[in-house]
Length: 343
Ligand SMILES: C[S@@+](CC[C@H](N)C(=O)[O-])C[C@H]1O[C@@H](n2cnc3c(N)ncnc32)[C@H](O)[C@@H]1O
Image (cartoon, rainbow, N blue to C red; front, side, top):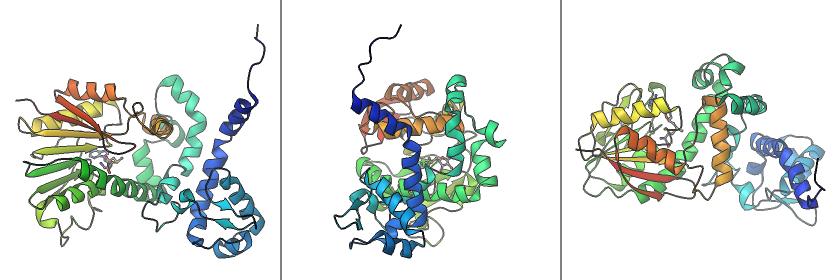
């Protein structure tokens, strides 16, 4: 037997809006692909002028912009022209806080194939990627979806560059003379740390295809090259690096076995007393829960991975044998877990 309806009209409308979330994501993606935000500067423009600039149909572009203004992405002036808002500016390629590549990455074609399978992933607790594309996510990306791989690299660079400053600001490396970034991508965090600490040496370890495109500051001829070792490798197999401080940022989101092996390899390589700083987005205790929980579900779909809770991260580190220290926020969406390799 059902009870009498008590739903408030605004709740029903909110739910209607939620189920159209894909339309919102698609509108942001279309805008980023068309370069609409780049075509608009400080002077508001009519849909016709914008359409001429980005070579689209004017009426359809007006409809796209009108949909986005409902979310605060662009605003419509009383005379019908469109102006930037703080959010729409961040879709510009040249904005220092640009999220254009991240917007594209979060809405890449494979995501539209994978989201409808979320019920299946929740039923099995596992990735749906192989079932859809015939191979695991990263091999698919690099072998079959080169354009997506390029978007991924640009998005990771954006995200690393933006968080590298915050990490360098937070980490007190007094007393340390070497730092290793494990799974450090193209080395933006490492470069920021080395620039801040001119006496320090650094090592970047990541997969071969990634470190070969390392930040130019770290490569031969780069300003920091004399203080850097670039090590291509698989941290699940070995971490052949001795350092005073190990940074492991945004990689322990895969399966638990990979996390166990990576932390075990760091501990095997490190001197007793070495610092291990794990930096992650958390699905609890975070000011950006809608963002981190969405990323968590995307990780379930593509690699069968998960973002951590504070407790799950601490227990993975403790199980690996690390002695835990403080947990501190790095910024609005990242936390740093301090630990030490026992004697
Ligand atoms: C989400 S990115 C984070 C990159 C960087 N730590 C940062 O926060 O900017 C994950 C990184 O892990 C690297 N990675 C994945 N599997 C790896 C492995 N088996 N060994 C070493 N690095 C790996 C990827 O190439 C990628 O650079």
